[in-house]
Image 1 (cartoon, rainbow over the protein chains, first blue to last red):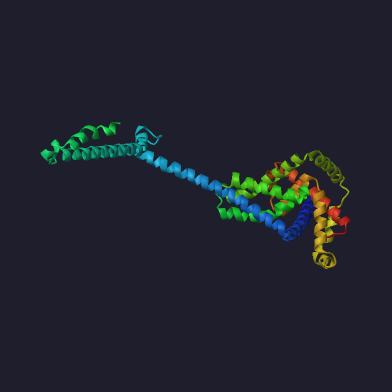
Image 2 (image 1 turned 90 degrees about the horizontal axis):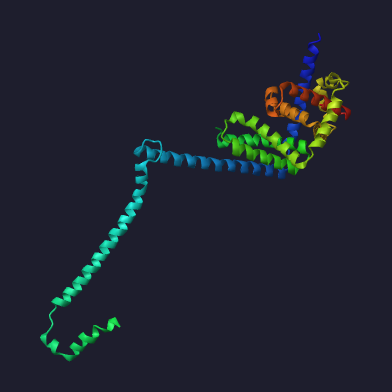
Length: 149
Length: 188
């Protein structure tokens, strides 16, 4: 007999608590519009923070994964070894080699052009009378010296 | 790991109750919104990768911690403890007859007719006032146990106390509420 009383009380307590909770739940459905809007905005803010974390995590895992796969093809997978570092330097080496090649080709072209002009001047026909022309002689003497001034 | 939709659905399902519970605790709407915001951000930022079934417990724990942080910031903890001791003292006298208070509620259909003359909003307001008057731990246990529909073990885990303490808090809260509402002539 004595055992039935605490059980009944506990049962009644639970029933009463559930009835109060039902009232609270009904009242919570009618929140003011500004509060509902604020709660919605808070929820969206929380979700956006989580998305930022997701993007960071995914980006980090993707970079880590791609880097690891690249290393796996060249090394033992324990980290970027000698060949891995060499492979990462290939683009820089190719750039420097390209610049040097371009410089050499341009210098060669420039020299070739000067040689062609000189050869043209040397091989061009000059009438013998030109050497007897005083103006030409003056031109050779002073005309060639003027650029040095 | 919970998907974005699962997390969104979970937050939407708890936001209203979390807000109202915070209001009951701090009695300040703006502060309650701040507490809910802090709780949701903490859950999303730090525990967003947890399985969906873990989210309710985590959120209840975070909400409790955020509420406590708010009280710490407000430096009203001593006042709360004094209120707690007042309520603890009144709850232990054992003079209140719970059975007498609750037997009347067996005919719930009859009370429905009485509700027609009393505003539901007014009754809800009185209930909320009495819930706010409960000691903090009793209120927390009562709301988790009956409103959040958590069992005793879950409530104990969320509150960081024993299951026996949860049962005691809930029992005292129910008795205090029943007595207060009966004194106001409110029957549920």
